[in-house]
Length: 334
Image (cartoon, rainbow, N blue to C red):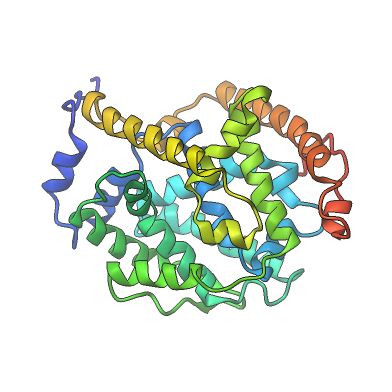
């Protein structure tokens, strides 16, 4: 039997029928797992990840010596991150698939901690990442002049991420601690972390530049790369741009990006029907052939992006060994 078609605007109604204290996984799934596509997911990644490498140790472990996957396999890295997050947000912290996925991340961190000892031992990095993820959409909507997420979604998001905290551990298998006591506490925690004075690093600058350039390179033609870069940098946290020593677009550009994106989302929520299926469900139903073609396309993008980025940036920041070390790369880092 074909699945029953859901009403035109069904997500908000279903969320309203649920109890956030007990149904927090389902509410978070409904609020975070529907409506995505490759463009939107890439934009979300571009807006989120630079915030997590504002510290010296965070940037060092990601850029490493040669850019790592963030440069050599930029699209594949976006896909990997999207898949991990989509799995967690859709299935929830109580599901074995989420627990297995998080453990893969823990093991990955353990592996790299052997090469960068101490860099994965900072408890606040993990807490900030999960707190930021909980409040991201709420803050973005407010930034765009829209209403924030509902109180039920706030409660559900707070509990959901609090349960996710229990699945991660820092270097040496140390359990995470210090989860804020409320939704407002999450916002306060993030703002305090973000507003600290930071000198920034060459590696952090390169990571953020790579991520912003990659979004533009992947989704916009060459003559509009400046537009593709202006969209995320107009929406990025000013503190993050300062830490990475990246100049924001001019004021008019930022105003236009916020205005048009806010209007687009507002009209879409009014005029378009809610998605019938979640992004992860569609992704998991791809055929083997579709998966192969998808990976082939990503390799082609990455093979072209690395030399493009190196050409743009290798002569910048005189005296920086990481900029000087950029070479024209023609193959994806495995």
